[in-house]
Length: 96
Image 1: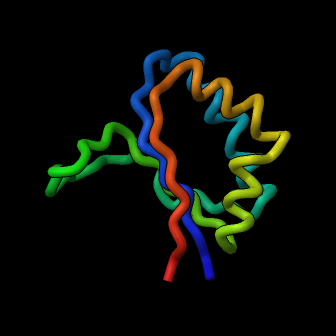
Image 2: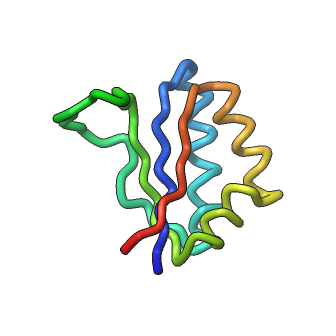
C-alpha cells in the first residue's frame, strides 16, 4: 500500500530554499518517491485546524520506504537546509 509524505512549508529564505529543492528531489526519487504536488496553487476550502502555506506531496511505495527516506543519512544534511530556511510540518500518511 502506498504512502504519502505531506509537508506544509512556510519559507523564510527563498534563495537558500531553492538549494533544498534541488537536492531533495533526487534523494526522494532514489527511494521511489514521486512528487504529486509541489507548492502549486491552493484553494483552502476549510481551515478550522490549520491554514496551509505551501504544500508538497510525495508518494512512496509504502510507509516504511517513506520513513526510510525521511530518516536517511543522505537526506539528513538536505533536511537541515530546509529547517534553516523554513518552518515545516511533515506527516507520513498511508494511502488506500
